[in-house]
Length: 416
Image (cartoon, rainbow, N blue to C red):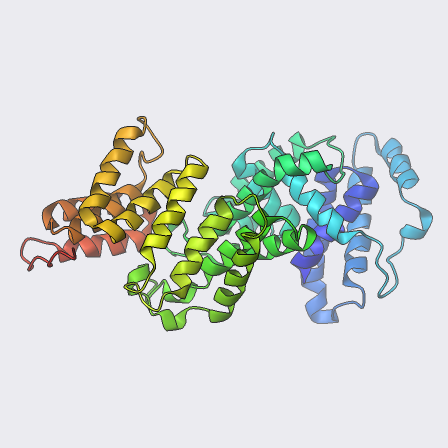
């Protein structure tokens, strides 16, 4: 509930007072106060009004602490009508919640901020996560996130709080979607640490994308991104074993997949594909839908998936899409064809390129070499991939695959 109200409360304060940085601090303190009081005293009849009232008081305190206290108080007093100084009555809605959430999303994803700052600020201002929660999610010190958020707010100082006009919205929506997808992918497959997945981040990204879709229901890119997240997250329960070990897609128990999420995601991707222009999120969602429809790895419609990856690669340079296409190609034409495609990708990529230091290229090559009946080269590639990944579950999985190909064990038969 607190995360639902957070962007609405922040939007109301920024709209009335300005001072995004101080308002954001005030809202965080109001959320902390609610987390401490509501479990004991009960949720107030108008939780959003309660939060606005508490945050407004805290913001007033912060403004008073500024060097130009008297002038700022007068400015704030002029900005706030007298009848809005009290919390609205139960059921009364003053703050334009939807517009403010959208405005906050676009404010947090302004182009002058770095991608890392956009993610941190979005999680805090729109997602309602505390600095400590964001730090734990990214496995970095809390002070690092605090500095990142502080610098971002400093850069936004003086930026008007207003909904972007249609031209700005069209220009910056891509950055907003990219931030939401970055949050989701980090939650779905953590880039480092002991856990393969951080469910809180994935759920938060889905929630925020649902909010965005409610505000922009006719945008195919937004609908496509929500479909992609739902279809991908539907496999979460089958991606890890009892001890947190990674279970690859072709070995997953598909009975564990979330059928409701698959159905919703499939319906959304069909809807998004009817709203041109078709972009990368719709196409990726279509790939995920084909995996979701298959009863087994063997039954997967790989020719159709390869055709979709052809479209993805044609839409723009994307190393991960190119890697996915190589896998799809190997499933249609055999492992050797996939290996040839990997060689072509490496030759065509400038050095140092997007694959430099990335373990995924080695992991894909290892799988294809194993399928092609070259256990010595496959083992070396698995070991290299395990050495490069920062994810402990992935490293253990890759090391186990390498161990299966040890010289003292019978070599597996080529798959094709």
